Length: 391
Ligand code: 9MR
Image (cartoon, rainbow, N blue to C red):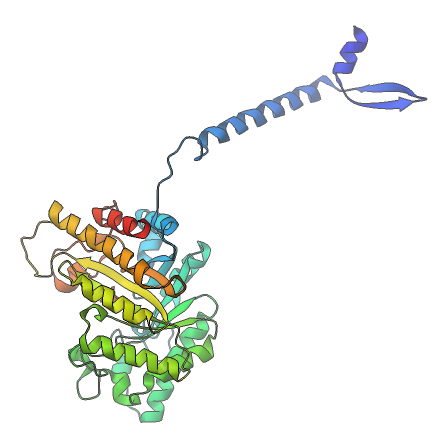
């Protein structure tokens, strides 16, 4: 009896002259081991209960459903100060584009005084949470600081300004930004010509870049960006492809020409700021033609306005919500159907919550263009998009 008791209290036995001897374990140590075992059992049980595979339903998300990256335009203010915003972004998306923080008026508001802090907040967040970062943009006729709009200099001085801007920013973010919209919206809506030198930049058709640098500035922008960050994918980004006509023809000619000359262009951005009355055949046909260039195709700024007529009394009825939802679904389906998998750079919405859309303040009207409502809840538009990614 005594011997059995000692045996129970032992953890280790030794032999001495072929006879086993037992080292008794102190009672307090035994109690600690019992408690530790009990704790392990309780923790294992708890883990089992909380395991999503056993009790929680799996909720589909955009990023887990799409066979390509799903992105959104993002503001630094949103990610730094709004937990709802952060929550939706991290749950649903795996790619992000800076809404305004990486544009010229922000990165160099005064000549030589670089201000990368707002962009750094966005790029740092993307790195921390493993989202793909798409840079937007180097060269645009808008979002320019006054010192550039008022710059007086000859052609070489303008070329230096242009090159310095591109290369300073590309170098600052080298290795942290996967891709860039190098040139944004260089083609006119009315005649498919380059925004030109005859009109002032302020009226929406002119471009100081074309005015001071000649028509081949676009090719040089890509070359300068590539020199500074050879690892980044480089895009030409514009809107209105779904209209077809001269604007689409010009875009195709531009990007094909660059590609054939060996200019380092990787893809084309189709912004897709569309509205509820869009001609869906135009979307399909544009996607087919863009895919035929062999370049990557990025739906880069998607939103669907439901109040293109600026109706001050508009109500966002169920019928409108369902129409918008069907369009989101159509776009995802058409992208999957018409763009080969290897050329799909992804679908990016321009923000994701109606409260953060550029459309209501820009047009001074009510509108609900995005997949989440003003309280960050999923709208029928969200479910349409999700369905289009799956069926
Ligand atoms: O949504 C952007 C808005 O917050 C900025 O104030 C504005 C100027 O920087 O740019 C808006 O984004 C535009 C994008 O850069 C290019 N395509 C059209 C977008 C909506 O105007």
